[in-house]
Length: 300
Image 1: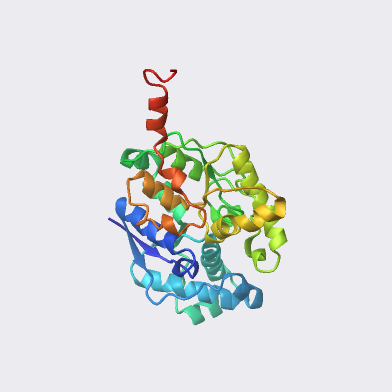
Image 2: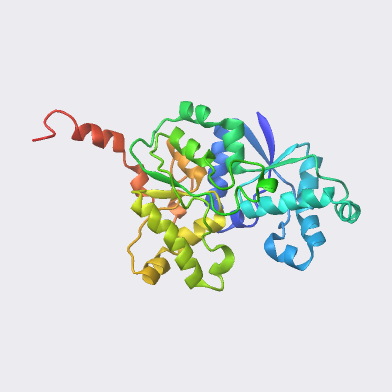
């Protein structure tokens, strides 16, 4: 069993608890042991970096140092924002001007660890072939839209994963579940991010474009790998519908939830009942329905 240090971050402690549950369930199914970082702290997110880059690096770096002390050489976090902070700590450790004060604060260097997102872990350590073999409840006939968001594969020199402008890793994983995955032109467009706190109109416009294009492509759900993207697209659909006079009703599950569903896991175990827009459409057996429609006497 592969041991991977797990940094859940603040979002997965609360609003994105279903992301945490489904992440654990799917990783366990593929023999990945998630070793939660002991006594982890907030990575500092955007505010800490804006206030003091060294403080921001040390906050994230402390988590990496604990992971290394726990004997792990890889750290995974499901949140792209947290991943950015962890990678920022490693950059500080490599910076001649910051390395000495960073090591003094953290107690060690952390540049030898590999930091990855959940998407990267599933794509590189498990892979579409293994997922396809493990599928017990194929999502045949369902149309799923992959949405990466603006941060997951960017900036390229930090992310070092997939194509920053046209990533395909989530596409391939979703295809492995049996789903139909159209080419989505807005897959890396911004949803509005933290402007949801101060500018609902701004987020409504940006997230609305993403949801509208999903509907235009016949998508039944838009699949995400970021807690903030999920909240903007899922929780704000009523606001978005009011803003752009639409009637969107699209579930926004996490990639871990969709894979877990295809593996035959209980939807409640995956936290799918926590989604604001009901994902019930994904529980329908499209393959069976299509088979009945095409069977003897269907035309009658």
